[in-house]
Image 1: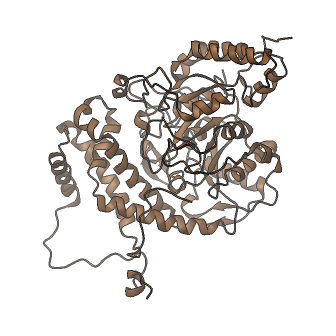
Image 2: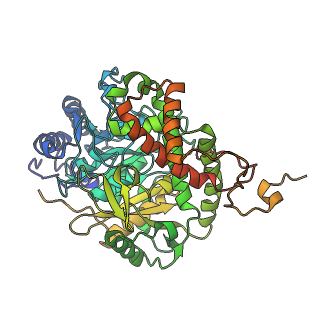
Image 3: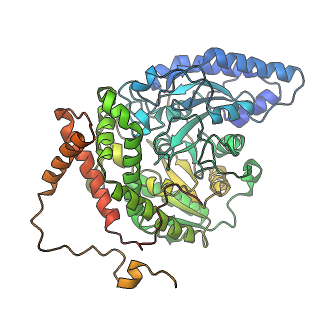
Length: 466
Length: 88
């Protein structure tokens, strides 16, 4: 018998799948409730830029019809999800947070990851707000307005996947996709108190998503549990010739490994550059490290320089991507993004190539560390969510720009494509996350540790006040 | 014969700055130089920078070049290949 009154506001994807598979509810009921919640709550959060209601309802009905015919439920049956609006959604222009892109023709086909999630039974319900062209750590957007942090509506979500974080932390959807070039999944997960996976570079297909910095762009899920991350990740893995960076590797499912826990894994805490002195970041790292018995510090060599090299490559590649638009439509950019892109166009190629050469050296040095450890812990952000509109924050008595520097601990990691799971430490009044960093292709290690911490109650996505 | 790195041949410390040539004329002050770089680049690359945007572009370029200094002063062997895309 169907229980249409079940409240799925804070349900995990795994629980929704279980309820639908057991016949306790239907995909259509879940999706209808999701759409109703978005209509009611999103005017406050400003996380959605499009709601694909008709498509979602048809898709949900098709899933229920298949189940009624006796077909086996797929692994994400009836799980509503939404995507950062840089993913192509058939029938919609791909905004990438930009006014300019509103003139673009509607996408003719969904992004690869949307296709894969829907093939696994998930149901797309809409597209999400983001920082313009993903050049952002704030979650603010001058065209669509800022996404708002569900834990405090006056505060930033972090960016650039700000709408993705607001939608999941606000209980609108259990799962969202974001992109992470320098920290754009991990920073909003930290500020909004969510789990986020930035997979190994080349693991998940970026096909039919709007690029930012090709050599640094990753895509991945945000969710309220590590298991939901793993469920989505497993559904999205696999080679895709439509993304030149996608590695030709077999899928390596993580869900069956999750319960192995963190026992036996060698875990260290990043020292030096990553030794953040803000009280909330120190508390978060200490709490996670203690729970894992990680009592050893490890130095990631030249991490500050790595962050600088990522900064240069980002500026150069992003400017190259947008050069024609800068020449013809400069007035239509977000001024803060436009100024960064113009500046990036002026960086001498010799410096950009030097940053790429440094990347080779740095990668070699960091990979050596993984001969003696399995995972490294580091702060995800130096602070909890700043106020919307705040331009600077203080770190070790130095005033730093929010837009450029909220990701100063995430950039040295994505710079060489290492897999990372951001795990939320629930502290009052605002959450903050820790990065669990693993060796290339060992996304499973980071997810296992995240799941083990969650089981111990050390990390959790806390429900915000309503 | 194995190729030797510049570092191996010169024995320079890894992060050594290069010696400056003393006979050069005094360079323009850095902020003036960046002003000039912004103006010249805008002209040479046909970038339509409104005068009102100049300060914002300059501040961003200054920030990028500050980061670039940190990378530039790190000596690498000549044979180091760029890593334009990450491969594990």
